[in-house]
Length: 66
Image (cartoon, rainbow, N blue to C red; front, top):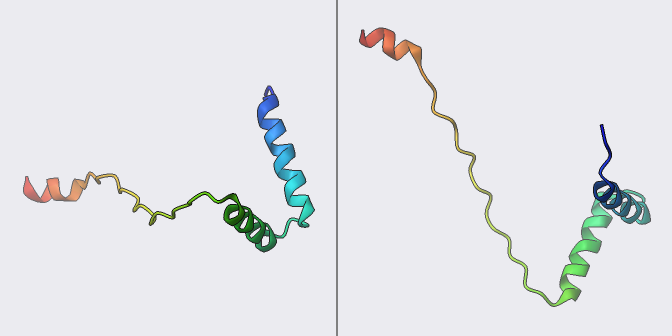
């Protein structure tokens, strides 16, 4: 498999960022929230979307109707 240099660069940056915080997700989260606040930009949170269930093809109904 050929390695994509852009993907590798993003992974390296992400890894070096996480390493600064000893890979502690709580600390990383707090840092990102602080950066978000300092940016002065407005961020919004949308409610999660419900996953759409695919329609089931229920073969039992067809057998009962026939």
